Length: 137
Length: 137
DNA sequence: AATAATATTGCAAATTATTTGCATTTATGA
DNA sequence: TCATAAATGCAAATAATTTGCAATATTATT
Image (cartoon, rainbow over all chains, first blue to last red; front, side, top):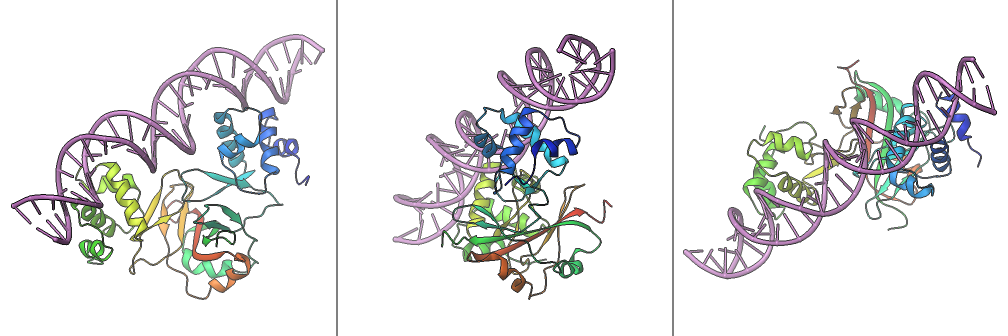
């Protein structure tokens, strides 16, 4: 807890410190799961406009405060992107549709990928497992 | 070419062989890229209803004739799922947004993942690279 | 501390992707 | 060939996200 200070993060990124951004970032920091625009609206019990949430999420993405979590869902998901939450694989359960964060892989696996990525410049590797989670099996 | 015969595939899966399913499956087989409902409608110049395409895609997914290609895009993408197109990693360019199919990894990498997936039953591993593709750099 | 300039927010409405209901049509097996 | 059940097309609904614009809040400056 006290992983990060919302106001500090906003200032570090040269962003205006608004009530809505503080509320939203607090909610994000205090979530240990992935989130969507709608799930955040539920969490901040202030009745914040969904449009505002979408716009703030766009700003947070641009500043790499959050990052995308890809899924086949039609809803867009994100997670906090900070030193306390390094890039890591996810497990998607096809029964309950939950997306579970897994521990990061130990270094060294990237070399295995070099041979297939060719001339493309790789900035990030997303690994996602699908199947049945331990609760659903 | 002649990778697969649409009518045969439909019959093998116990599906009714309809004109629309044949047209759509032909279009899918003759695409070496990923596709969306809309991109398929463009490809089959028959003016097939989008609703029909969505419904056929659902059936194809259920029968594992196609599979999802996950992305952060709000559009859902798919690819042909057959012996000629084994599961493989994708590269997503953040400039042109194209999704490029990469060669499959050689066997043996799965063991690296065992340690992080825990009690969850893994049925599939999705690997996706993001960055700048060779054309955009 | 008050103010001006500018970015942010909220509301309404538009857009995009996908799904549902229902009447019509088509494929398949008796 | 015909009956049956499933598939299709159209219209409309739903869900997620985006846009326009006026009202409001933040921040640097006075």
